[in-house]
Image (cartoon, rainbow, N blue to C red):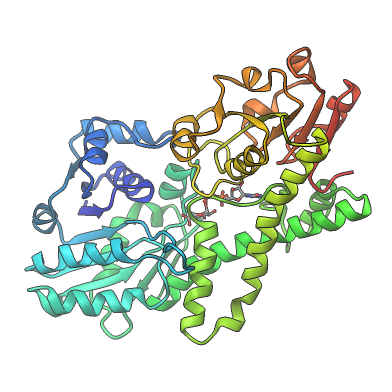
Length: 440
Ligand code: UGA
């Protein structure tokens, strides 16, 4: 078993730290935010992620997992360090903000007196790992004994534990000019996963960084593709959900990530495609990725379309009562970063409607981001007296809703399904006006 540190205990870092301890390693999670550390030390996950709290508590109890704010302790504790801090979008620019990643290297490297390997996990612009490696060797007392390798993370929120312990693949980018110990150490850390037969792709640093950027760009493109087709479906009276099933039967296409609706959001896809475009531009390859601008545009257009459908349903938004079911960027998450649902809620309120929002898990985060919206304690309360009900996140609780549940609750039996997650027949038979996106 190995001793490892995980630098950064946000979504990625906290999950990685807990899951590496679950594999039997001795893990030290390090963060500069004392409030985050306090919650993690108390066995509390600071965000909603099914199953993670159990893994955290079990490994805290076993003593294999600890947390600290000290980089001195981290440098002494292990010679394997995973870097998992955030790379948000820069304000007013498409590019990624590298300040947190850089500060990990600036804090850790000067303390490395013995050879060590830093495995980057964050999503970074191609070229970052090489730059960080050079910087670390320059400022570390151990000099050339310090290696930087890249081991991108592909976990999905809502499936973080499963995706970390049973990923589709492991990717490791190693410095071509100084291969060192990185691959051998990674194989030790992930031995249990490799025994399971999980594919291990070893490559150079740039390829590893690009694998991650390309994977997210592809997923974003797939969603915007079906949303673009859904616009044509709307214009022609076709049904995008049936169309997606039909093309999805083709194994080359596949049905997953072909759900048309109000589009993608979250802390990854939107900022990652923008950072990817910005980086390609810096490299003189901007033409290659101009299509991602269109992917972004199609995605943003879905939000505007949803507002239009709400307006059509009410006649005018001014003075209308709009119930919004779902605020998280996707179900089984309390994450509202760049959430299409909250964005739509905000736009509708700004156009003069009274907006009542309910989400099973994302209420606190939504209130912090959009304090001016009205929040309801449950779905029925949100729908009370509504002129239209908008389903914007496909939580199981909303998918199970039946017209009878809202009978006598709403003012007008009108529903717009922003995630195409309900059965139109059920609602229409009960006398409702049902609108989906890209459906007749
Ligand atoms: C995404 C990727 O799926 C992960 O592989 C990646 O590791 C992660 O970003 C990251 O870079 O950290 P995540 O942001 O958790 O994961 O969410 P997804 O499940 O990809 O969903 C993204 C958005 O697309 C959501 O708003 C979702 O509602 C939307 N979506 C997804 C659709 O609109 N239609 C679909 O068919 C699928």
